[in-house]
Image (cartoon, rainbow, N blue to C red):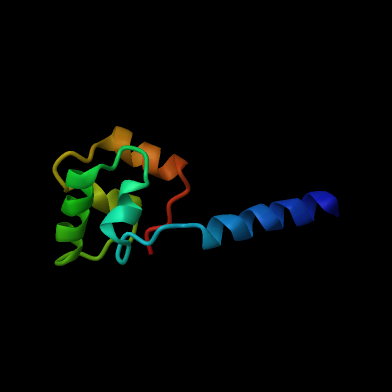
Length: 80
């Protein structure tokens, strides 16, 4: 039972601590590992004409490769 409660607590922390790429401020985006001012600006510009439904939706942005996408995934980022 304790194990179940612990897993649920970790899940809830993950869900409420996630960043929404469609609404996050530049400062919030820059808190992510691998995202500096230029990449944050690129995300903000990209989302003006493209909804970001998954982390893979960032791949068309210049400077976003598979390695950076993996870092973002490992950071438990929510994109919706």
